[in-house]
Amino acid sequence: MTWRSPLEREAVPGRYGNPEVSVPGVTLRVVNGRDIVRISPFAGKRDPASAALRKVCKMALPAVGKSSAKDGYVVAWAGLEAWMVMAPGKGRGGLYAKLARSLRTSCAVVDHTHGVTGIDVSGERARDLLAKGCAVDLDPALFAVGACAATQMEHMGIHLRRTGEDAYQVLAPTSQVGSFWHFFTEMALEFGYEVEAG
Image (cartoon, rainbow, N blue to C red; front, side, top):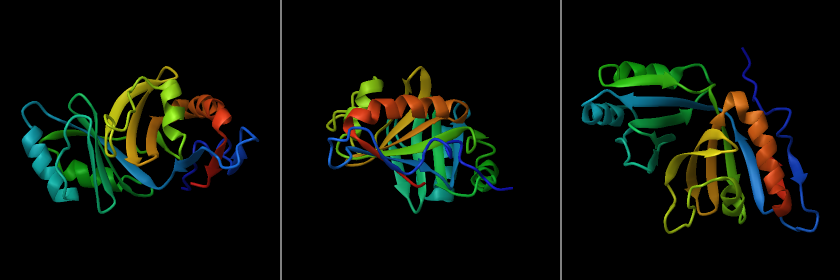
């Protein structure tokens, strides 16, 4: 079975928006080739879950609002007693199988690989773009590199993570990501934006 991006028709590489902007203020790229798994420790099992996770990806569960990255793995807080684990993959359940086996006595483990779609957002106006539709305070002093939040945008629950100085990643529900893309790119028009191949 060949995996197809839910945004293959919408996210066409090229320059869009304000023609008076010489350099696009925002770059968008759909994230492909990632497995995404949500884990939720059972009551009283956070420490065993963290220890078991460390054996899989050499990282413990990050604190609330934080993420960690190492050797291709990302572990990000995703809400009350929940974390997202991401790793390179082909959407065939490899990460899920590994985590389900290792964390079976300490966590609920749910494969979200096909349930959410990632969009990388970068550029000098990336923060301004996100601030137009998101209630999270993105002041760099408060939302540092590695910070993350479970929030809403365009009435959709999303996961937002700061991945670099002017770089972020949004995870949006796959079932609504077409609508989200339309909303997001409409907001980006004034900055000028470029879509890169995922």
